[in-house]
Length: 423
Ligand SMILES: [Zn+2]
Ligand SMILES: [Zn+2]
Picture 1 (tube, rainbow, N blue to C red):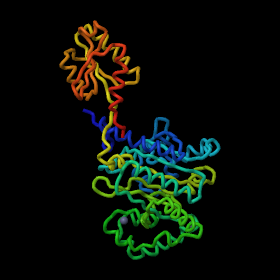
Picture 2 (picture 1 turned 90 degrees about the horizontal axis):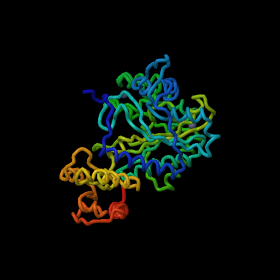
Picture 3 (picture 1 turned 60 degrees about the vertical axis):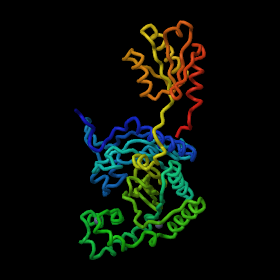
Picture 4 (picture 1 turned 180 degrees about the vertical axis):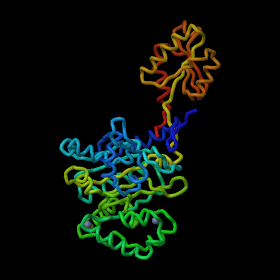
């Protein structure tokens, strides 16, 4: 038996309906906020991520699926969507093509990590990006979109964390203060932190090693080192969130594990797998477009983990399938007429099925039960000769003959009349 690769998973019927629900909610919401969909390839040149995501990040150093293809080119299965979105924005001059470059995308990402519940090597994200807008109001809109998504999905106990990591002008002072504050504690910290202190000190805030936490708690905070422009920008973001009635809390640890973040960073936490986990995270990246060969344009966005969102859905969101009819043929002679009826039902936009292998009526009825058919249509015998079909309501067991010419409308009423609102 050949099994799926570790860290990848099949999304089976019964679960996939929850994915549809999350994806549908996300799409509708993005469209309501004026974001348009873009689909970029899952495979890109490796340098897009070493330059875009950043040479010193854990993603690039440890987690990328990179290989040399048959043409000798280094390629990577995308570990995140933002660099691809930036590439597409630059490559197609989207700011000239679109009235506003507000984009969203849904799809798989790949990172070689230790798999656990809610974390897979092939995982899926909703990615939202805005280019060429720097007003704090757009930061607030992006955060509002993220917050509203989590709320519309019915995910409880959500919490919004925000921070500002400053800009090119003010970050060096913060980094210096950070390294100075580490002082004699640095040799006691984990290997990753010691490396980070040399390559990108901000990333020390990402450390999950228990023993390092008391040291990290004493470190200086980015917001105390913001330049005037960054401080005003962050104040603007908070004022807009207050005006929207969106509750926020500043987390000094929110410096995000990627090189490109500037100013606003944020995360939405939610209750999953019995603990509070990040459902989505993002921030502003004002230098990224230019560093990837584009014009000097700011950007802001977020990525939401679909696995996490699906896990965090309330139990009330369960699998929903269309109500269906089931056609039963009595005897070989009726099979032709039954197949014709089946096809007519489907052509009329109704969900309908039939048993193909077993010819016995009992076996056919059993299949109708297993499929949870709402209505069964029995074709054959005397009714067929009279131009009628027996329509059986599977919930009540009531059945009656219906003229063949009226069957489609009768089934339509039966299936739609009882339709509950789809989740
Ligand atoms: Zn600044
Ligand atoms: Zn550490």
